[in-house]
Image 1 (cartoon, helix red, strand yellow):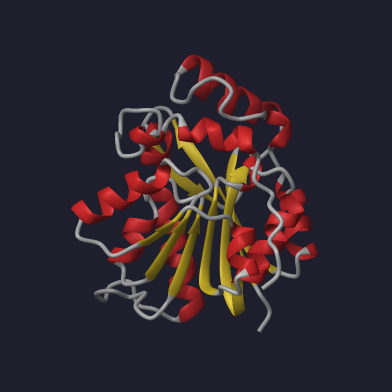
Image 2 (tube, rainbow, N blue to C red):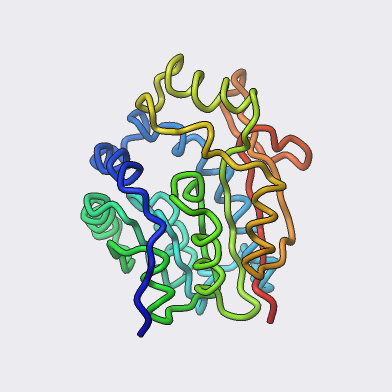
Length: 248
């Protein structure tokens, strides 16, 4: 087995470790993710269903699919994926997140394999998946290209990766940093670093260089009037999501 290199940035892991206990508090430090989660889940479930011809109106439509949730945190995405029937492995580089996720899954009656492990370590071990969820992680790693390449290696031929992140422009600085961290105080100051944000074209470049084929991208847009998120075909100015596949 080859030795895994790591793209983990210890300072980024420390930020999320400090917030670990608050993952399931909808009014706590992860309030933005709780608000965004229905929108994220809508996109994720539609992409998986389309890729694998699954009927979302059926019970456990993702049964038989092996899914990896990288940067799983407290399990906000892992749990609904498990309820939909997928075999879920939740991976996080922050050790304190794992017991939080494990306890909540047990309380929810769900079987989820949570591991304190990196994408690179999983790839070096030869693990492969039908779906890799890579949500709001790439802007926190030390080497985005090496990280996305590890994600490629984690996909079975024909498998699907869904990757979301934050665009880098003046609007994203105003919204994701000034607004979320300083005005709304949704997140601790310093949670995000603007220079680490990635434009959609840059992310497409990382994805294609890694050997993946981009198949879709959409924006996640927050409406401050309705206090809800929605999916946009055109507005990728702040939060956005991509779908890509490993060629069969």
